[in-house]
Length: 455
Image (cartoon, rainbow, N blue to C red):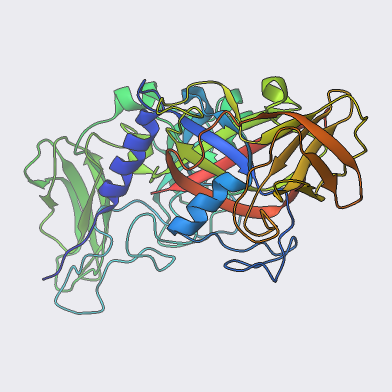
């Protein structure tokens, strides 16, 4: 039995994901973690800081994300955007053009499978695709590529009428990027996609504006056959056919008509029918917007110190509906501290602990890795992972109040109090993870983290 999961399934999943950010019952958080270096000897992953490992989609790794998590920030509905791969208009490129029948076999000859110019068998499968971003940040859809010539004339303007450039290409203006979209969501590889209301309002459902002569045939009477009626389930479509040398050489739309879902001009040409609603009625679906981009900004010690500085991180990800620590209540705070911390007694004066060194509890034997140390407040933030060892014997052990802690560099301090993180470890669902080379943080620094989720 032959079956497919269509691209509409991907679009629907992207839409559901996008809309869930505005739902009161959901809390998506961007998290950062992994302050310790990637090492080739680390079990179950390995990698190095210059060549980070690929995350594994398994239960063990999901647990691990919490043990070395630093902090998390809630992703607001204003921080997301539908996206598509970015394709700048470039002179000398052959662009694919819109057709509704890519992948179909239009004759009994097996080689007659309709493919894009760039070898794909659906609208979004080719290497250059069928839309471009212009130098003025307008997005155009290619409606005709002049039988596969290179594009040499950049499309311009925002007219609702199709534009024919000097190279014979026909373009359809779709939308323009806003200033916010450019500054917050435009990257080297992806660009925002949205529907222009004016373009959508002018869209005609089931219009036929283009015809493709697959084979000209033979034996026809030469001449120009003007304003022929387009057959099909729509109405008012007409075209003019030209025959020369006994073959059909061109078919040109006169009236696009409306409401066609199939059409037949009764000669050797294919009628190109637009998407449901018409071109531009839903640019997100038409251009393949099954990517959702998040854009989260982390500024200095945001969240009253939830995000540490003078430290680096090597993992970013998204967790859905984590709990507040010690509860089963879904977190809604803007930021969440994910680190354990200890406050040392003022006397005896604690030594100077060093970032990334291992500390050991003198009584408990507990071990941890220093993430941040503040000599003024005497607060040390730390993580405990199985990779650095959580006790000398290998079992997990928590640090204890009143015990003396010693760093690998011999600094000591007596624990006056212990503080839990704000996020409940292992709660919620980790739905995205990305391992990276180290990103260093400083007090006067702002990180702008963009993630692309593909459906």
